Amino acid sequence: MNTILITGGCGFIGSNFIRYAFNQHDDWHIVNVDRLTYAGNPENLKDIESDARYTFIHGDICDKKLIGSVYREHKITGVINFAAESHVDRSIMDATVFFETNVKGTMVLLDAARQFGIERFLQISTDEVYGELGETGYFTEKSPLKPNSPYAASKASADLLVNTYYRTYSLPVLIVRSSNNYGPYQYPEKMIPLMIIRAMEGKQLPVYGDGTNVRDWLYVGDNCRAIDIIFKDGITGEVYNVGGSMEITNINLVKKLLDILGKPESLISFVTDRPGHDRRYALDISKINEELKWESIGSFDNKLRETVQWYKDNAPWWKNVLNKNDYQDYYKKMYSKRKEEVR
Ligand SMILES: NC(=O)c1ccc[n+]([C@@H]2O[C@H](COP(=O)([O-])OP(=O)(O)OC[C@H]3O[C@@H](n4cnc5c(N)ncnc54)[C@H](O)[C@@H]3O)[C@@H](O)[C@H]2O)c1
Image (tube, rainbow, N blue to C red; front, top):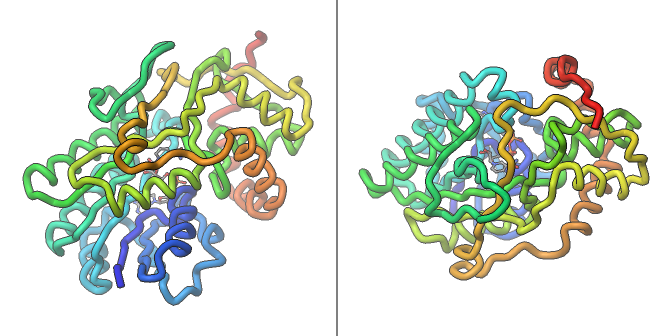
């Protein structure tokens, strides 16, 4: 039996990954350490919480004592670190907790991994560490790290730290840098669930700037499959880009969602841009394609439709989230002062 520590497993990608891993690995026991911040939602794992192969620990990855006892008592063999403060806009308001969790928390996990002789440590990172692209080109795993937001800077710092534990202590680490994920259980501050839910409610859809910023979209199920393959077969010390090869401007994506939902484009409202907003991200994924034979499966339009359907079918899930004070406060802070701009 492998005992895998998953951190941040009550968040969006972590909860999807735990569900995926349970279906793939009968011989895994998963220990999920999650602080249950505003983004951590135990409801995401309701169907799994009583499984004998699952242990939940409510705790902070920055808590050295707790993490040491988790590694020791559960005889952890591998670690996948999803836990993070993950929203760029919140990092622009206050970066403190981003550096606490994303950098210090990663260091605590790495130190314990050294102490307890962990066989595999997978750091979940992001394409945002590379900074932004112009109209052409792709980031490879060798592109320099040039983060532009406090969030991206904290993730890049963690990546640098992870690399030093490989070089200095030969800790068996790997890093995954993925593009923007979408799918079920995503906290509705992020673009796709935000737009779907507001459109379903007939509310205005706030689009930053002129809407021409480009993102590459990766279905969370494809990402979970990639993470699983990299954890199993990736080469120690290596970085792997994981992208959906689906570049689209924000405005075209919002129009697609409105079309799927049968809602009018008059709901779109252009608002003041995010400060330092990166123009374009795009990943060269030939390394994972060729070396690990991973590719995304199915069409973007179908996966987007399925995602819309999930939010339609799971209104109690998102209504619970929306009714919490944190979400209300955040939305007011973020959007009430943003001017509507006529385009
Ligand atoms: N969502 C994306 O599009 C995307 C893209 C690329 C990379 N990533 C990375 O993937 C990882 C997961 O992202 P997500 O979208 O699922 O994030 P999320 O915000 O939905 O979930 C983060 C989880 O981490 C937990 N957490 C936060 N601080 C913690 C702490 N100190 N100790 C323990 N748990 C803590 C939260 O409670 C939550 O459950 C992050 O590392 C993020 O940087 C996300």
